[in-house]
Length: 327
Ligand code: TXA
Ligand code: MG
Image (cartoon, rainbow, N blue to C red):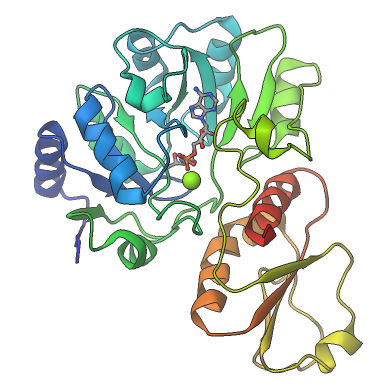
């Protein structure tokens, strides 16, 4: 069992000391909980891959306390600076050319590195006292649903790590948006996430390239981590891209869980669940992983979920649902 620590000054000091001696600490961010290590220490970062059972060809995101801190680890450009001014701290990661100080373990040997500056207050307090960036993937066993509470981290990795910093439930509930900025004249979204692509386009004034919806397995190597199967419950998950009818819900067998976007009107059985009261995408995103975990733990034989509208945060929600449903 890991110790779940509140972000008191004393605990933060202890966690920084532990990180300095190559320890792993689960940390809250505004997106999901991360499993953090000193990003400049190859051995510490190798322990992340071991604890998660993560393949070594899936690179990690480096987390910093401010935009100025990225100059130590990568070569920035004007577009990155502009976007950081507008959206950091927040759920947006940049991919930029790396500097030699970043170990190959972090980037899986790539000449680029992903960087982001989270906004969660407890994370900010922790990192502001560290003199190194923190490499942190989501704090879940590889390919399972990402954690949005300390209890989720404990359930998946409690046997493998010593400390979880308690920052309560994560605000956004899906991971950061990853933007390839290596060529600032052609920015490219590598992963939809909590910051909608539309917000980035509004800021920069032109359309950005989006991830291909049907990336084949051999192409996945070009965009590491974009595996077709990910974020997956053990229970088979099926998706519907049209609203599920009242008739279907009324006749639903008890062994099948339904996960709707919005609370249905009328009375239904205990196997009918929903992600929001009124269809607000931010509420759907923040409840998504917690609900999938709860349904996975409830021994249903099947989960049927509704897809979100294909815009804004709906793109990130559907990306996660489709990977979770992938066989
Ligand atoms: O919100 C988030 O981004 C969370 C929190 C903890 O910050 N982190 C997260 O990390 O989602 P992870 O490891 O689950 O996903 C990171 C993904 C990798 O799978 C990979 O696709 C991409 O980031 N990535 C990292 N470095 C990259 C690089 N140099 N080039 C392309 N993609 C990269
Ligand atoms: Mg992950």
